[in-house]
Length: 114
Image 1 (cartoon, rainbow, N blue to C red):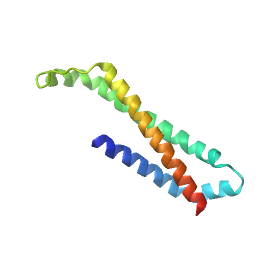
Image 2 (image 1 turned 90 degrees about the horizontal axis):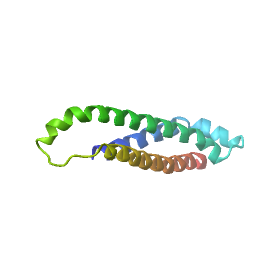
Image 3 (image 1 turned 120 degrees about the vertical axis):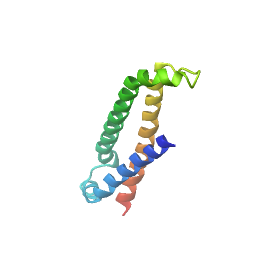
């Protein structure tokens, strides 16, 4: 639930960035820039910010894992592999990036129609 709320929060904040730049996006479109060219900047911003957030979360989780694993071992018999965290982080990046791209294209098209 926390991950879903976090992804929603990221996408909503990214929509706010698009809404703040409505005038610039419209001006660039009127100057002849294509939708793909306009969206490229926002794709990079979304990709870099998502990657930095997930990399930070992964590193914190990786270093804290040993501290918490010993106390959790007394409650749970299951011991996750370290690769599980990396695979989860990569999958989460993929989900956020794809949803962000979809939301980005929709937002830019909506701005250009207005």
